[in-house]
Image (cartoon, rainbow, N blue to C red; front, side, top):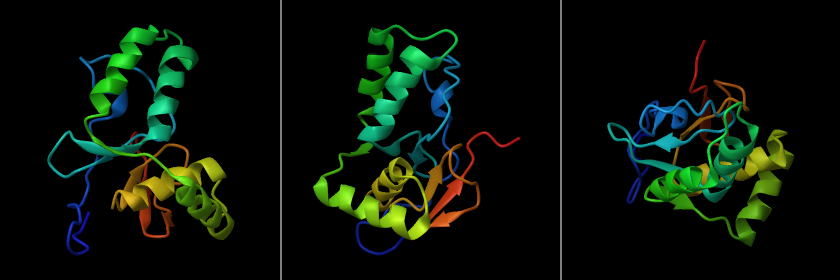
Length: 143
C-alpha cells in the first residue's frame, strides 16, 4: 500500500495464497484470504480470519486437516501482523455495515484491514475491484 504517513505500511501485492502457504498443501480455502506486505510473505490478518481458516480447513474441505496440523498453521500465521478486535471495532464494523451494505462479518474484516493500515484486501466473498472506505478488494484467485 502507498505510504500514508508515519507508521504506514508499504503497498501490498498479491500474497502467496493462504491455501498454498504450507509445504504445497492445497487447502482449497475460500472466502477472505490475507493482506500481504510488498515483497514479503509476511502479511496482516485478523483473529476472525484465523478462526475462519481453522473451521474451513478442519471441517469444510473434502479432505480436512487434522486439528493439530491446522493449529500449527494458525501458530505460524500468528507471526504476521494480527488484529484482535475490541468493542470499539465491533461498533465501527456496524457503522461500515450500515454505510456500505457489506455483511457485518465482512465489515469486521474491513475494519481489521483499516486498523492494520492495509489498502488491499484479498477476498473471494467481496466484489473484486470494489472499494470500501479506503480498502480495495481483489480476488486472490482470478479466473
